[in-house]
Every structure is written in C-alpha cells, then in structure tokens.
Image (tube, rainbow, N blue to C red; front, side):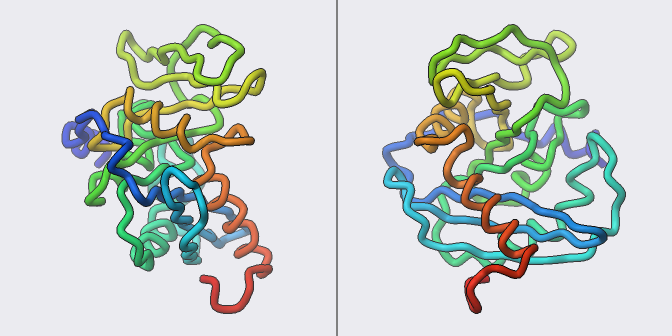
Length: 212
C-alpha cells in the first residue's frame, strides 16, 4: 500500500507563510492497547492555542518501524475530523518522505488532507547526514540512497536537531521555514509540542471536562 501511495505525494509548491492563519500539530500517546491522539490548532504567527481535539482508539496494529502510520492513523484521523478551525497547514510528530518507502505518517495522512502537511520527527528513521551547525536555523540535507529526503534542522542554539521532511503539498524549504517559525523557546515546534502535552493529559485523564 505504501509503495502504491508514494507516487501521489507532492513535494511542492512553496508555501507563503504570510497567508497562514492557523497551524495544527498532531501527536499520539499510547498505553497498553490504546492510542490517545490530539490535534492542537494554534494561531499563526502568534502561536496561541485556539483549539484542541482528542480521540482515543484501540491499537490494532503492532509497533513495526516504517509501518507506524497503520498503528496510529485511526486515532489521529479521529482527532483531525473533530477540528473546527480553518487549518492552513498541519505538522506531524512523524516522518513524511524521510521513510524507507517515502510514505511516513505525515505523507500518508497528508494525501487525505486539504492542506499542506509536514513531518517533523525527533529521531532519524532513514538516511545519513552531517552534523548541522550549532545555531538555530542551521541545517543539512538528509540523504537516503542518493536522494534528498529531508533536512536535519537545529531549532534552538545547541540543542539536538529535528528531522523535517515533506508530508504532502509543500516544498522542503517551506516545511523547514514553517517549523522554524513555529519554534520559540523549545526544541519542538509549538503546534506539535502542544499536541504532545495534550495527548499525555488525555491519556492520564487530566484534561478538563469538555476539552476534547
């Protein structure tokens, strides 16, 4: 299925950040046989939280590197379907094209979204790269089998980089620009950081009643 879907991914066009108003982040927290997905929608460029939606679903697929989408899509899809804000782009805490078959979660779900999608992962799944410079904004190409599949980006001075790749309908340069614009005091872009925190609250049943 991944091999069949991969040719449909569009690595482009460039994104005009001046026209963005709402950026969403998506993440999943798991425990035992359950997945807890949340989508946090932030205003842009202010990065203020305007909406958080969550969805929990049973895990029906094992954890297999490279097949994470099949494990997490049901819960993430459920959370995305509850979003009411007019989202202009979505950042996933997952891979996009930086995947053995160029079909990470950000690309898989990105094919079914009406907006550009970006993969911004905390760790490398495929490829090789040099070490990026120490300053925020420094980046190097992530190369897999002779193909540039993403960028390794320093989002804060001196912290570990993140792995940015095209999900769908956005250029790699625009994906990096969006991730950096969404990074403030933390290593992770604010939309996915907020989604990550919300997913943990949902899993621990700490969210205020009615939030999700």
